[in-house]
Length: 190
Image 1: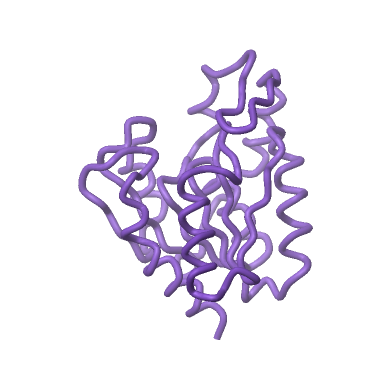
Image 2 (image 1 turned 90 degrees about the horizontal axis):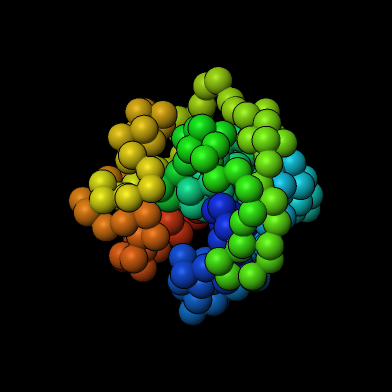
C-alpha cells in the first residue's frame, strides 16, 4: 500500500496527492493507493494513520509524507516498521509552527480551527531520537521557502536522498519524481 500523508493545513485534495493518485491509477495501481484526510490534531492524525497501516502488512506499506506529513511518516517508520518517501519534510514542526498559534483555515477544505499549544505538545511527543536510514527516500528542494532543506539533509543523513535544485515548498516539479517514488514503494513490497 502506498499512502500519501499531507501536510499542515493541506488535504487529500492537494496538488501532490492528486498527481500521485493519478499516476497510480494510470499504472493500474489505484487499489494500492490511499490518501486520508487528516484531522488537524496531531494525535488524531496519527491514530487515523496507525489504523490505516494496521489493515496491511506494515513491511509492505510505504508512506509519502509531505512537509508535516513527513514528520508523521518518520514517527510511523520508527514505530511500525513501514517505509517512507519524505517530500520537503518538516524536521521540528513543534518549533516551525510555534508562531502559527491562533485561528487557522485549511487551504483546501475551508475548515476553521484553533491551533493551540496542545497541538505543539502533541507534535513534540512524536519526536524520534534516531532513524533507520534504509527505510527512507528523501526528496527535498533547495528553493523551499518554508523549510531549510539542509535540516532534512542532516536529519536523514545516510538515507537515499534526491536534492532538487530550486523549486519551492509546494514542489511544482513533483510530477517528474513520481517514478522514483513508485520504484521505492515497489522495492519495499518484495
